[in-house]
Image (tube, rainbow, N blue to C red; front, side, top):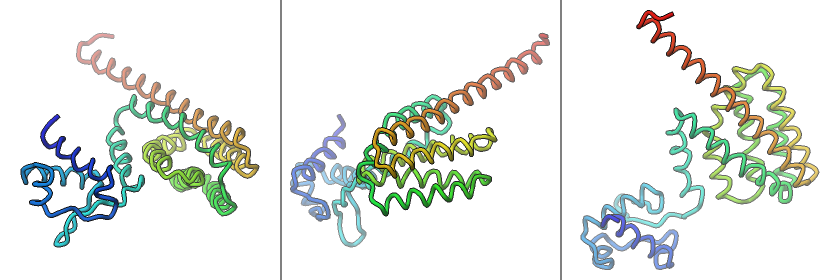
Length: 248
């Protein structure tokens, strides 16, 4: 472990112990360095790293503060990290697998906790999806909002932030599906209607099964699409090599 990592751990421990609760102001840099037995350079680097991680907020002319430490803040970098994986087919399938593991269970939980207002929000996006079935981009926008409304109904902010990060990446998969498969819009609507029916009936088992079917169908389509795309690429590469060598 580097000296900077150790310095970061020391500041994190002050936060974990409650010595620096959310919203509190850190001591000035010289005082913080002395308190932790660090050089000022190490203290500065640790603060910078924790600011990037949204644990600390540096306010020019005012000082450095501990943030709210809310999951939505601390985990917001997940979506950006996931986006960096956009060119990796294997990573995309891994993320779809994670979504399949989490989202059906989250939907079941939502069925037991959703309010009338939350259910109305889910239905609003379902109705908008019906209206937008011939507009792929708009359909997918309401698709994402539908799932956000469902997971929001759990009241679990960490779960919502994690699934938002993953779904932000898989939104591309849903767009591909709409562009490549002309029947996708109808199937997607039917799957979402089944999820809504489970939620409206406050039926956790039915909601989970409907969500699992929906995510599994999307994952299966994506696997097949990526496999066929890879086969086409391989075939094209063989053709190029044949042209170079003059082979039939």
